[in-house]
Image 1 (cartoon, rainbow, N blue to C red):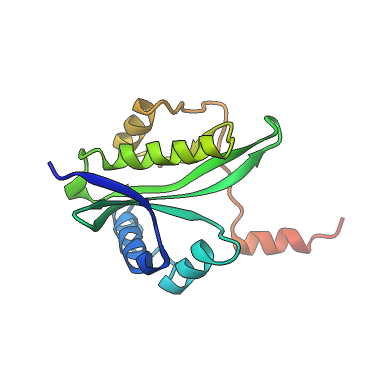
Image 2: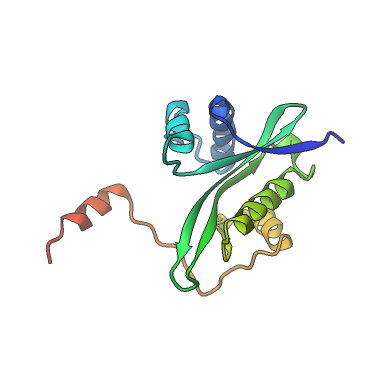
Length: 162
């Protein structure tokens, strides 16, 4: 079995990051869903004030997986949290330990930052991902439901004057 190396992404990895996200979008049935560009990756992940960070899993020096995360804050716990936004491993490299290694590195980062927890959202139909996160110790939060406000609706809400 080829060994997996986990490392922080660098600006030069923007093309690989975008390619892996494209594979993730196809896997999730939304191949046209990615608006992110290489330029945006370089600016948003590696600029003066990064909005997100990327960990890459490499086999033989070639990226085979990624984990995108950002830091948030829990007012209830009065501590930072780490949100795993995307975790994806190419099909040929699944069950190699790459996903587990990416998640473990994210946990080390969360601990080093004093985070009180890590959160992740999983598509309801993605049973393998649900099992993967459960095996890693994540709990399904039965009492919480995600809600989203898209840009158009956000504009309408922002325009309200009460």
